[in-house]
Amino acid sequence: MPVAAFSLIGGRKSISGSPLGSPATVATMLDFCARHDIAPVIETFPMTEVNAALEHLRAGKARHRVVLTR
Image (cartoon, rainbow, N blue to C red):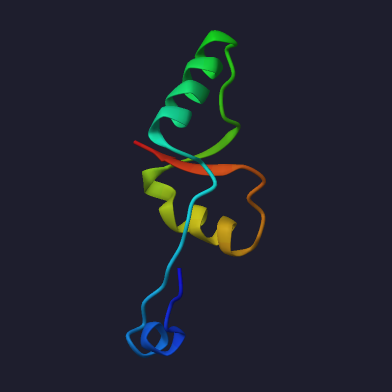
């Protein structure tokens, strides 16, 4: 699909994609994870420490997905 780059740049627009696949593929993957007890590896921060969580991300210290909790 041809795209006019200058119209994107001038309008401050972007085009992106996702390697995840279709909703059916995602559902299949989630079913597989549930059957095999596979869970994500996360780092949690309470919402009251949102600034610390952001600094953790900006400093490049996050080793896993960062999740804010109540």
